Amino acid sequence: MLVPEFVPQIFCSLYLPAIYTGFIVGFVGLVGIAINKSDIHVLILTDIVGLAMLIVVGAVGTDLAEALILPGLVVELAEILAISEILISREMRKKGKSSSLLPTPYVFDMEVMTTAPNFLSLLLIGYGIFLTGFTGGVVAGGGILLYVLSRKAKGLPIVLIDGIGAISGIAWCLWIVGFLLFFITPDLWLLSLFLAACGLLLKVASKMGLIGTLMREEFKRE
Amino acid sequence: MVTFELNIWFYTGCTLTIIGSLATVWGPGVKDPIVRTLNTEIPSVGISLMLLTYNHTLALLTFVATSVVISLILLRAITRLEEIGAEV
Image (cartoon, rainbow over the protein chains, first blue to last red):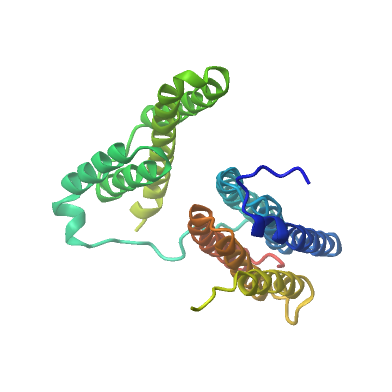
């Protein structure tokens, strides 16, 4: 068997049962999709097929497999969100009624929202930049989210929202360049590591900030 | 010395995943989309056990977070469809 030596022996013995489980689950999910006619039921069952994908990738048992699970999870989440929105907007057009994402208007009346958002978000963004990478992006993005949600009074102009999207795209390019450098010139590993880490930080942070800008429209609703 | 039996966790995870996926597709009451969404939690627990066996810490944490968010999105989508009056 062609297995690299750093894969533990026990994971090799677990490989076949895991792969069979993945195939069985994927088959069951696909049969369910084939026999169901309703769109929302099919959407729920694609979740099961996504789980089968996770098993097949995770069964390899290396760090690379773990690293490949993360984007798979995020893509699956985005896909389900997008498809459910499309389904709902289609039904809204058919029936001529509308329904917004949050069931009741949210009005946050917490003291921290008015007294200390500047300090707290600065702290979170600073710590996030210190951490870099995926985790740092989440922490810094949390800071941006807190700032955007607590400043409910004035809205950001459209140009700024587009600008955040552009930062996200540039950060994506940094990440890809970092990855490419890893393979082309392994001597520059430190540079490529930092390119990838900072790119991912900017990417995740700006995405979370974008979520905050979009969600604020919902929060302002009385 | 207590030996930590890895296979128990792994095969429990496999069994839960297979049974849960069968329950989601053909289980009782799955005509109701809310029941179907809640049934998807069973294979999620199974996968969590499998990821735990493989020591995939980051993947496990992200998976727990995303599966919660996915079930929230699906439940809200179902209730929104019912609010509009569409057939679910």
